[in-house]
Image (cartoon, rainbow over all chains, first blue to last red; front, side, top):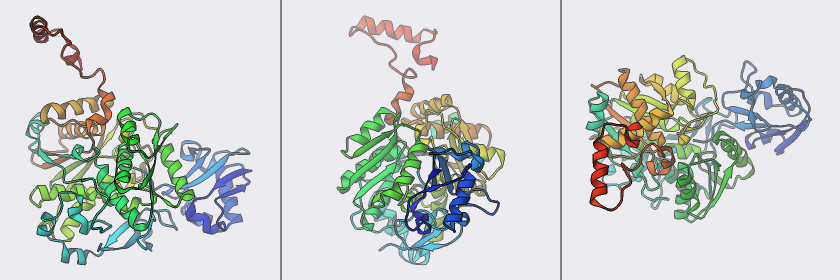
Amino acid sequence: MSKVRVPAQLRTLTGGAGELVIDGSTVGEVLKALDAAHPGFAERIFDDEGGLRRFVNVFLDEEDVRFLEGLGTPVTDGQTISIVPAVAGG
Amino acid sequence: MDFVSGLRCRECGRTYPAEALHVCDFCFGPLEVTYDYEQVAATMTRARVEAGPRSIWRYADLLPVADASPVDLGAGFTPLVRADRLAAELGLGELWIKDDTANPTGSFKDRVVSVALTKARQLGFKIAACASTGNLANSVAAHAARAGMDSVVLIPHDLERAKVTMTSVYGGRVFAVEGSYDDVNRLCAELTSEQPEWAFVNVNVRTYYAEGSKTLAFEVAEQLGWQAPDHVVVPIGSGSQLTKVAKGFAELFQVGLLDEEPAVRVSGAQAEGCSPVATAFAEGTDAIRPVKPHTIAKSLAIGNPADGWYALDAIRRSGGSCASVTDEEVLDGIRLLARTEGIFAETAGGVTIATLAKLAAQGVVRPDERVVAMVTGHGLKTVEALTDVVGPTATIAPTLDSFAEAMAAESDPTPTARSLR
């Protein structure tokens, strides 16, 4: 099980919860399981090809998954996945 | 009153009221302030601007907030300096330096922060916050103090000493984060969800903040006698400044302050150790691949630039270019500008000047163009970069003999510390 942190913009889908515990062996699997538990996530964070939208960043324990293996990055128990809007900073 | 009609997602077009929102709730695209340009055009005249304050607030009609007493330390209306000696060295014709080192806290960030905190105060925020590579930290801490707001500033732990001191002196809270700027930025983006009562200038009020950079274009045009230049060279960190400079020239024409439609080529400058936009430009792709920065130009060390794609688009549409320069070239650029024009820029300014030199040598920036280079931060902020690079000609005893000896040695052709680098 891993912890998923949800940004304010998506908390309407979780009944206000900012942190959930979800099962899955890769980042992609966890995010799909998140959508199954709280429908609506997939269309907000994935593009038409099933990749992450341009302005969505996903981090696994503080590392951008694009520096890892993307949605295929393996997840072990106790790790934290954060969904973060990309438009910030500078 | 302001002329804001609302906010609009740059990606999917959904519209929002002018509140503390920075991304589209649906697709996470960036929100952009929209204005009633007809009303602006009916109100804003050259005479009205020229009668305004000698600061960014003379352009209030095209800013996202109206306030009779804005949060203001005097940002903007910085010198536009004709740079003939630098132009001659680079083989260029009419070259100008927009000297934004002259801002109250020494960088262009005062423009965006003055706008952001004025809007934040209007929205009811009491606490100013930001993620910063240093210049923004300086500016947020100073403007918050000016406004009587509390501030919370997060910076990477390894910033230049002057930037840390210059942030801390204003009495706000400063957190040095053990990580890169991109780590700090991610932390602040997450904090925004947890601390909605804080105005993170470059997160939840970024939509308004970013608009402040348009004033660079407004000023350049006004200072050139209400004419746009042919080519501007702008440093790229997040890409926001470059995007807004391009927008600024277009808006001035749209509201009738320029007679001719501007055709400004916009070129971007990056350090080689953090050049995701220059790389995408060179490769001809649309995708900005994030990088792990490693450069002395820390104020531009953003490996995952939020507006990188829009900057790339603005560069391509304008017929501009984008290039990157090595740290050594950055130091050369700093010294070249100082030696030829008497302006001491921080490392980001060295990036701009070195990139200008490179693009001039390539024939991309041309001698028949009226060129403006944006020098956006003061050299005193990054003096460490020049340690062992420049220094006294000699250290001497307080005697005439010692002076004469040192002068004689100086004219000796053997390399000295000064001529080595």
